[in-house]
Length: 233
Figure 1 (cartoon, rainbow, N blue to C red):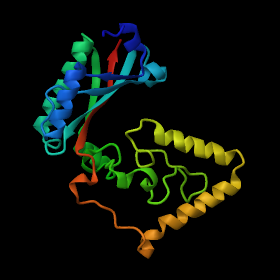
Figure 2: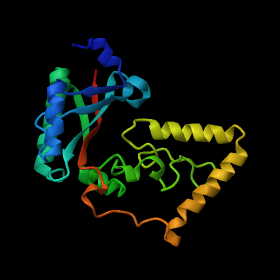
Figure 3: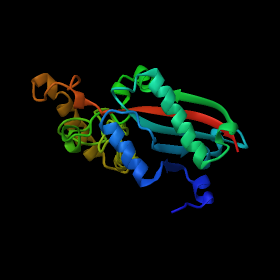
């Protein structure tokens, strides 16, 4: 079903691909370790939500897609994937390329170089297997936004329920902060004490050491992100 143009131009986030069959092919390519022939994008139109993101008459767009870990650090594979991403946007928004004033491409190597937590270029804080979910994220035993530091709550892909639930960690952190600020002083003290006790557990041998050298310790996908693409119109 075709989506009215006005809906897409006013949307802050657009999921862009080649239909259900294209999404199926994309998932299959990632599963077998092959660079997707038809990429699927999560595309954000930041100026739609905040006009101050770019000068009047221009727009800032970011987008990301995935590559299998086995090829995500190959510069030629990345180059072809970036071209495929731009081809996809051009097909859905004719004239896109002619309006681009500047672009920035972040590869998996760039991501891990800027933040060592993004192991292998994985943007969601590692694996989504059960031992990193529920009460095991971010600390084994207490899946909460609160930290041992008073007034500091964790809202990122490293917190429950993980980066795959868009906005979930941030929403949990905001709720916790508001609850504590609203008079839950005793609760806040109790939670901080519990977090301190759990976070010190490795010193007593109660938690296993971090898993860093197994293939499933991080997402199998590296991310290719084109952020900060600015164009007129």
